[in-house]
Length: 507
Image (tube, rainbow, N blue to C red; front, side, top):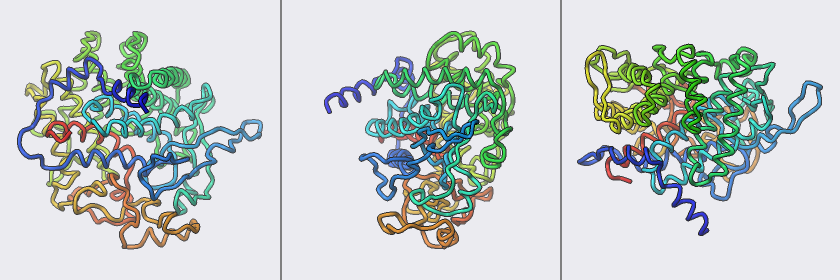
């Protein structure tokens, strides 16, 4: 126990630059519109409700039980022999019982980035956030255990979606899909490398041996991704599409992966890679939607830090690339391209729009942090936009999510008095194993899907897809576009909430 306390104390010591940047953040005065600390606690707790595998004694979401304990046990090799690979663990990415590797890896990259940037502000929640990252990074080590191979999916999505059953009961095929030299998947492999590299930064001080293992694996996986190029959904289309097709190609993930490896290793090899390949990989493309598929905007912000904070002059052009993305979200500037609802919500797509709200808010706050440290502003067509303005835009989005909206609805389950009660989530919508020990069959559960009653298990902290373009939310379980939570919605929100809670003196 003494050793654990010692490790914890070491972990909260921030790297030099992070400490300086945090000190530069100015606190807000006056009463906070929301309890950001409570929302932070719940946003992290959500990940425990998404766990697959053998649950630990510290599990706080008590209505969940062990699941997927044989994942990876029967992979068919090319010679038709069965291989046994340990793929137990990880997260169910959303409201089904699938483990989709592409969005899972992105979720872990963003959760790790939340901790890297704002973990020093989290205080008592820091260890819970680290636990959530480790649960994911442990799984990513498993899926990359074999050289030149990444296991990218566990489960047959079509068969899984034909059932409505608890993960503890699932009896659908746990088919395993992989990318390798003959079935390349640069996008998913490079994203996995990014997640491993980002996670290594989370544990660099608290568990150096684990961090070294993560970064070594990240290097190997990135090399595989870069050497064997191809989009993973080209060969695996029948299995990963239309759920998580790689629509944007793999160039963004290569830039993103190289950026994370440069940050994690400081190895000039990755700096050279970014300099030589950045333009070819789309560094200056005007694609302003940041999410599990397209990472260009995040890569620009991340690389801009190297120029703004670490003073890497060779990367000066990324300040302009990052500014271009940020300006697209600032209302009233010549470069504004973002649509907002009448209630003020950033609106990108009708399907799970809240993922873009949380990811964009995180990037706004993170870039504001870098700008404040370097005493710079954003140049938007001749107009100078301050870090304070970026923070205000991000806070407005988070406040909308937490209930400051036309419906007075919090889109985080368990936060506030009014929140979604009928979320599109199998485990939450069916009786728990404790309440109903008997098995609930594949088709038997559909009664719950179409029921109008509230979910029996409250998935605290889950953020759903959100309202439609008219700021309306029907709260219907069958409406997956608006009622389904996902790990990639919550992951960037963790960092944003940590900043806001700190800035209002709640942490």
